[in-house]
Length: 406
Image 1 (tube, helix red, strand yellow):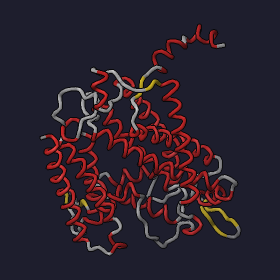
Image 2 (cartoon, helix red, strand yellow):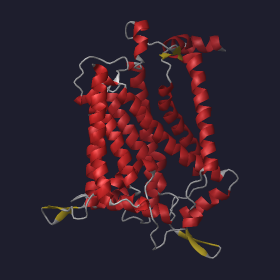
Image 3 (cartoon, one colour):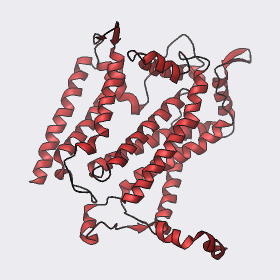
């Protein structure tokens, strides 16, 4: 059979060209693979959930109570033999994918692998990260309980507050004023079709470019390779064996998380009501919530035509876009002209390394600010910390990295 297929498909050439590709060995390379496998698990569990979920906010009568069809379908899923655990695995796979992407991007940045000739792949990675967040946001609304409705409504209000074009954009994206009869079907389409399709395409492009450009590798390999060749293990059978292990390990971790850390209880919050429960975004968006809390309510910027840029737009869109945009164009701000094939020590790029550490500290400080009320910390204290901690981190990191270079 192999001989017959080889004569027609030239399997030996495929094996020589692709299955013999060498992968460097380092634990941090698994962050990207964990993100990829989390996406695979998201798709598999999502397909299972598709069979029972009803994307509609239309009211139906169940046991004498009027419930939205989307909300009732979640109750049906929860009552199925494997429904609840699959839904929880789907939830935690989304969180794990975003966390793994963050760690992967941190490794790429601090090792200098975002520089020439990998600028394009860094930008594609940022697009992939943004799409992963959009997937989480659109999926969060689908249970259509009181909590998810309020959280999604906050996103609608921020989009609606964009000067001049916000109302049109918000109504187009959410199929009217959220929640409207078309909102859930529209968000459902984004979540199961548009965003996954874009994610799949972005992942494919990202991996093709990675294969074409090859991995960067630890600097200690330079003395052995003496060039741009990769020191590591071949795709088949060693790397594939490792990938199977990482996939199974990722799956087991997700099932463990789903068993001990349940998602918010839709039965507890119930269907949407006029009452507004206390809502905080998921951890990966908490820093944006922190920015909104820090922006004074008096920060209203008037524009021609009686339009105003309000604090929600400043904190929810403008400042986050500036931060994300700065990170995206980081490779083009680098003064490095030579191609990077080996990991750069932090002291070889003291300014970039220090800025990266300062941004991480700033995001952590902003995320803590999201719990300012619960922690009973005055807002003025949070403002001081958010401004001073990243600055101090930058100065200390710059001093240490320059000393290391000296």
